[in-house]
Amino acid sequence: MTHEVLPNGSVIGILGGGQLGRMLAMAAARLGYKVRIFEPSAQAPAGDVAISVTQAGYDDHEALKAFALSCDVLTFEFENIPSAALALLEDTRPLFPARTALEVSQDRLVEKDFLNSLGLKTAPYCAIDAAEGVAQALEKTGCPAILKTRRFGYDGKGQARVMAASEADAAYASLNGAPAIAEGFVKFSREVSVIIARGRDGRVSAYDPGENIHRDGILATTTVPADLPAMLRADAVLLASKIVTALDYVGVMGVELFVTPEGLVVNEIAPRVHNSGHWTQAGCAVDQFEQHIRAITGWPLGDGSRHANVVMENLIGDDVARAAEMAETKGVQIHLYGKAETRAGRKMGHVNRVTGAA
Image 1 (cartoon, rainbow, N blue to C red):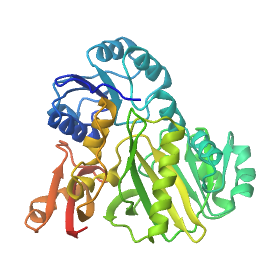
Image 2 (spheres, rainbow, N blue to C red):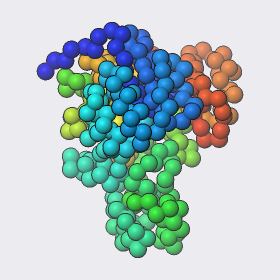
Image 3 (tube, rainbow, N blue to C red):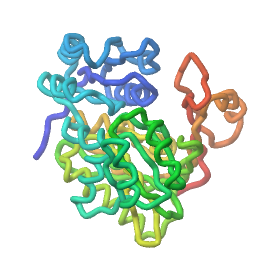
Image 4 (cartoon, rainbow, N blue to C red):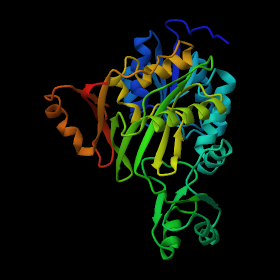
């Protein structure tokens, strides 16, 4: 099935005004599109490169409706959007990815059930509905484990480690009574991710898997190519393709994986452009941001081929002060997000360092 390409000069509405929205807006401009941003907070880095910013909460349905009507197609850079808001938006303008895909990824329990239904491996898990259920959940998952809120967690937030059963009550209390899930530890040799896109015509294109290093729950570096045998690289791409096809997905998705002796285990999926895909800006002719814009506007997808080996490093907090010094290094590409305030743990930018030809 073919789809008409969204005409030049059309307006893309992006929900969320962070750095991902900023880079999506810049990619949209290269393809001749204008961008409007919807963002609850006053400081929106994406607003610097958009034609307008609507500052309102996701519970302000009147503002959401007016925003949607001012756009030709809608997408998002932030997945924690209330279901009622998504329903309103989807009823007003085309929304990609669709609400159903977002709702799967918003709830860790629903996500794990979905992945298992496809025959994909995940960490052992069990829902926790109240403090009394923690011990029973840990019996199923084993200990050590991680307790996570089912919703609204990212970059290590909404999580608590349980190294011994005696720590379970305090760990659960730190989640403030939110519906939770216990996940058993997975013994893995490395963490990798696949950035994959699916177009409105159902065609799929994937980038090479990247190898990720996290510090304090936040992505620190992504290295491409990942140190994986060819068979596992192919398995990772096929697995990601299975997920986006089952969801009838349109857009770019990040699929995070653990590499284990028994094969690949899915950690989580992110229904948007992904931090671990920033390397594509220096390693591919069509980066993940342009790929997403192509997908949602009906353009043909880029093939995902890589022309360079790349190491992406996040600039977190005061790391951003090193940017000018790093710019002196050959093969380094600097991306700063224009955030006014530097804070510990805050992503301020990233650098892509080309380490050789692919």
